[in-house]
Length: 428
Ligand code: GDP
Ligand code: IMO
Ligand code: MG
Image (cartoon, rainbow, N blue to C red; front, side):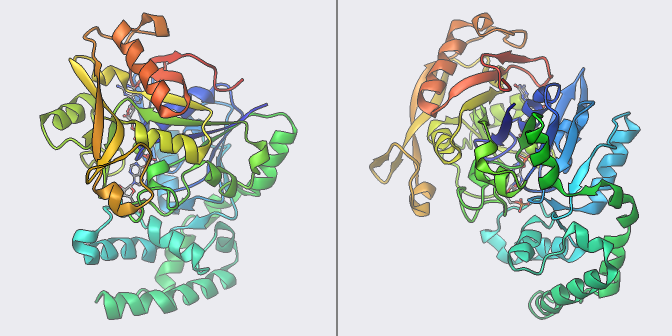
């Protein structure tokens, strides 16, 4: 029985939510293992749109157990806002399990996210402002607060006091903000504690037992390879492990139990926030991709930066994740182009790089070396088999497959659940 990781190959928003949702009907568990409500996953079912941030996309499939793993940072207020919004639309969220070892996002984490960005000025990361980085900093710094702490007020108070000892120096002396009190933090974190308690459990035990019993698990990444804190475009990254290894550390399931690692990649590239992006288009073509692809953030509404497909990036993702399969999404968006550029390598001050430069400055100075593939004009949104696609769309995919380091197992031709071409089953 398979355990499959679904992650992003680029800078996020590749369509991981749709890909996970599609596996939903055939999996028993969907596990979110990293990130928090910085993620925004849009899933369209029968024309109805759902935007998920903190909850795993599997929550939309009846019978699936959605799990928030220990690697996630949880904003409890947002968790219940999302649960309430889904329940109001008739989605049953009662099976949710939240790892007792997941960390929470405290109010001071949100404050610090916003003030540090402001102080960074032109060196800012362009974060989502949700307190993600500061919450992970606290975790690594060993002053974080975990879900289980919420159920022991004495320990919780001590931990908040310890954390605020540091934060208030920073807030008051460096950032010129008011100090935060223990009482207001306690009140904020405990507001939903009673409601949260029944959802909390030993997620690693649950998931490993499920595997022992032949159940199927899908691990759904937030963010993506190029935003991973180790393998992404540091420091313009998020603060968690969005790559395949993160599925293990963020869930308590060992690497020997993972069968497949699937990356989702758009047929072009987008990025939100600051940082290098070699194929970015700052011209009319970029605007065309943004409008045609509806490239505006699910979480912050920010316009996404757009550019052509970058095979160097996806090849790199294949390598650092040990990919077995690729899901290429939004092929329909490219319909109507005469020629479609695809970056196959970089030029860095006259030097050719066929693989991702190891040095950050080189990547910042990389300009794409393009190959120009023939486009197609036929509407492909109704295609359900590879052979239904116009020959140039088929050639585009086959060339992508050749230069991206993994086989293309599925292709998206529209946002709906059904708008998909399956070449190889992902759960078999
Ligand atoms: P995620 O963060 O990786 O889950 O991706 P997002 O949901 O943030 O962004 C992907 C967007 O593309 C969403 O609005 C999806 O509904 C949409 N989408 C996904 N796959 C396809 C596809 O194949 N074609 C089109 N046109 N839209 C798609
Ligand atoms: P999904 O799961 C795209 C980006 C932010 C910023 C950087 C750090 O929908 O693909 P953070 O708030 O995490 O500290 O911000 O990471 N970012 C995303 N970009 N998709 C996401 O999630 C993202 N989550 C964070 O824009 O550049
Ligand atoms: Mg998204």
